[in-house]
Length: 330
Image (cartoon, rainbow, N blue to C red; front, side, top):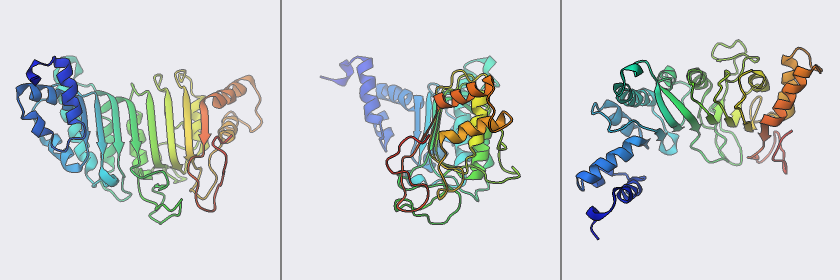
């Protein structure tokens, strides 16, 4: 049976499958006009980059897209990101945003609405272009955002330092370094459609003066975002439990369903993991005293118990906060 006789819906499924992880998508697009039309729509609906040259090439092109993208994903092999990766990502999002704004004159000031914005790459502590993280990510307004480390779980990669760290045999590599965290959270504060946030291998600023931090120890991790439903933080260092507590205490967080902290540390990975009781204690401290027992405080503590789940996932070979046999940390 000739492909020309297939229903468009079935042909679209075939083209989508053929384009998935295809290193040479142009080969398929050159088959005929129908494949070109369907293939372009597939590629522009779910934009995926696996290397920096792809980002650069896409961002430099001026040809209008055939449709507005629903997802944008960047997954760099080994997480090796050049210093200018967010410069190129910004160009990509501006190209997509230009198409979106051209569909309606009322969208001149609008951000790019996405179902998913996904990153899998490292950041660099000495990258002079880190401010471009904010400039790029603030162009979008995703419903789901993920920034995950490219390393396997047993490679506990944070950016506390560039020292080699024994964690089940893994090396310490830089993923979301503290300065990058600052610009990342600045961008998140501009999103109004965000529902799900997943961040792994992230290090928060340890500066007690807050010179690089987007919040103090009593400032909420995130502002009150009415649509926000889930927050997942995995392999986190230098995270004050108080910023989680302050977020839980905010009004207008009625949609929040759960906050998962997996292998989250108040200090380095050689210190204790965060327990749910740490967040409960921080709520009481925010309310004024460690033993506060008024109705509002108890309601907030109960909210913490309902929403916050602290977990241990990856155990180190020796030393530190060893919790063999415990998955949930209360």
